[in-house]
Image 1 (cartoon, rainbow, N blue to C red):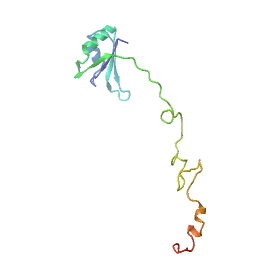
Image 2 (image 1 turned 180 degrees about the horizontal axis):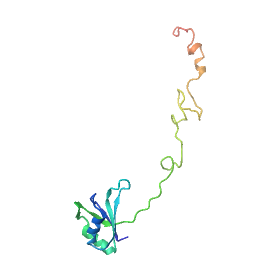
Image 3 (image 1 turned 90 degrees about the vertical axis):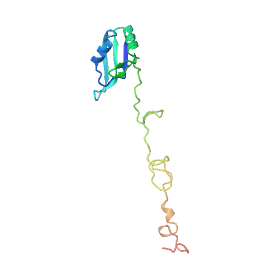
Image 4 (image 1 turned 180 degrees about the vertical axis):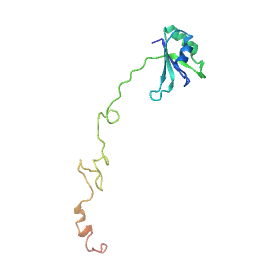
Length: 154
């Protein structure tokens, strides 16, 4: 792996042939890969150049790092092996330690659907669902007390 170089800060128009010719003056180039966007096919601005021996590769690094190529200073170093990333988690809540699917509740934190006036409750936990009919029927019609000075009856 010591004979593979990372070449960065490439001009967008740089091709494999251009790099083959440029790096060929420092040794035997076995392979050149210009990395491209998989959807547009446009160059991504970096490439990998593989030499026959690690000594040739190190000589190319020493002679090309920071030198201008097609109007841009090159960033050249020995390529590191690709790090293996763990596969992404496939749970429904976006990861974390919560583990697996947890359905979200509607309404507030006290229950399912907030159905009435006073607080949460909800269908799944019971609780207070607002004023009950008996609260309105104590005094007479429509919840008003009959008689008295202020009520005026109804």
